[in-house]
Image (cartoon, rainbow, N blue to C red):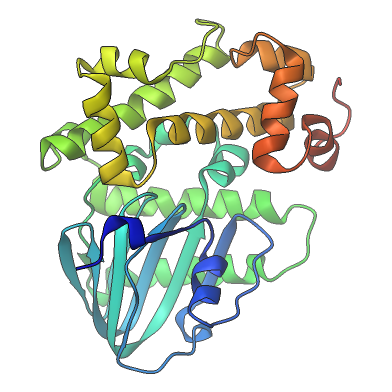
Length: 310
């Protein structure tokens, strides 16, 4: 059995496939590829891994299976399945797939979809999402959308990410309409899954309050544990074991995602953004931002936005 400490976390799909010896270029936090891009020997089996990105797989032809934590699901023609960050994953392909793989980060969702994306699409926070097997007529619109996404993904355009973001909204709305219109996150499996889902929703709501100036302090582990009625150590254990990331790691990633969204889309100064996100000193915010993104807030803003206050 593979111990959790041996399961590697990949931040992008290109990192994952490069680790398998399959070169894959990636310049943006959204990707879409046809499955025949990944030339492998069949049957093939991946190592277990964790991904720090969302994945949607659209299978037109082929047979196989995939692992999501402690569950195994089969795939067949006209299958769509979805996974979100943090889970232990793996896949096995018996007959070569024909289809598409879409990946995107939370940063992409916040920057090019909209900041309240998890309100409109709560299933993005779901813990257990079984595959859906469609009739060919119901599957066809998803193939058409994938073809549109690929065409835009391969174009060079100043509006490329915005166009991809809008097409992704259409794709997610079709998924919501067909599969998850009545999704209830509280109805999910075991208590550990419910804790993770509730934590993610609480994290999202807390940062919404920060941006709306309803609070001026970033919650820490103790605060979220109190909110969920749990001991901090137990919350930390559940989040780490179920997602592969600590509570602090989730808080850091959310802080960076919100900071990037504000730097791109608001006219607030960097100082104002720092205070809004709970930093007592703007200089500490700048150091924190650079530590986790390798660029300063000013450099990030200049790259993504013009006409803003510094």
